[in-house]
Amino acid sequence: MLSKPDELKDTIIVDAEAHLMESPEEYQDYLEKPYRIPMIVKDVVTNTRYLVIDGKLVPRPFGFGGGMILGNIDHARNPYWGANNPKLKAKGFSLDDIEGRLSDMDQMGVDIQITACTNCLSIPNIKDKNYAYVLAKAYNNYVHDKLKGIKRILVSAIVPLQDVDLAIKELERVKELGFKSVVVPPYVSNGTYIASKPIWEDEFFKFFQKVAQLNMILIIHPTGATNESPFAFQFYNWYYVRSIAFPFSNMATLTGLIGEGVFERLPTLKVCFAESGASWLPYWIWWLDETIEHGALRKYFKDRFGIDPYPNLKRLASEYIQQGNVYSAIESDEPPELLRYVVEKLGMENNLLFGTDYPHVSDIDYFPDQVRVFIENVAKPANLTQAQISKILGENAVDLFNIR
Image (cartoon, rainbow, N blue to C red):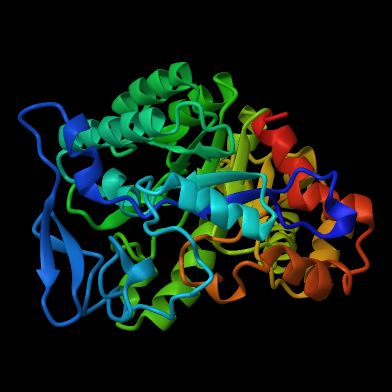
């Protein structure tokens, strides 16, 4: 039985930002021959495992963009990576123990969980686009088959975005399989496994166009641990990598999508930013609006050269937010005053989703009380109404993902 606060007994609670810790061995049988899963190496000291992709350990255990992760395949159960919460029922965090995952959801009071992959977020950064394509297909087929008949767990598809045509091909296929969303990183590889190509470049527009056409949800998920993103690559320590890479990647991506006119040209596209909360939005939207309003450089280019450097930017960033294109998955311990600003000033009451990051260690100390922590420490101090709390905890996600 689900454990819910009395005032939410009739509310569908959706954890819109959860994860699988997929083990590559589990989707080996889904790979097309002659392909195999990436090589796996084991650290005999810490008993952790790494993928070897394009000759590099994933996640990077040391050097720029590395340190402290100590393996990403099964870190949620590894004593060297964070403190395990003894209340967790699942014995594994892929789809090897679905009943255990459902029991954990019951403890949290979560009706429906929307999950993204963890290690497979590295797929759009593999040098061999054809290998990336068959890996994406294998993962998507694996989760589809494992979750047949399971209505409480939805999984976002992964696509080989380093090749837009292959990404669209896989997107159309997973739509037919019943997937409702697709998760992509903010940057993809330029062929060297360094994630240096931003997804707001024009070559990706037809992918966004197809997402909107198929009425699917695009989830932007930064990947500070599974590739060498521009911001992660500046630091040696995971403290810096997580602190900088996640919100900065989302800030940059929102800037690019607005500036390149993606929302202007695709007004029905729905994009959800994950893994950074929503508290970065007040500052960043103000900053973007100020930059757009004081368009001296834009005017200079127009007057001097007859060129508009932002031909598809027609409105303020805040207006695109109010248009309803942008969603954000919030954390259970966001600052109440900033959440209030996001709801009141940015008008995102209908565009905020609740997320726990289960089973990653960032919020696992709160387990299984994430919903209660959010209500008591965030929602009530922010003076949110019961209707607004119900929207954030579930109703918005139910509407967005059409899961009534």
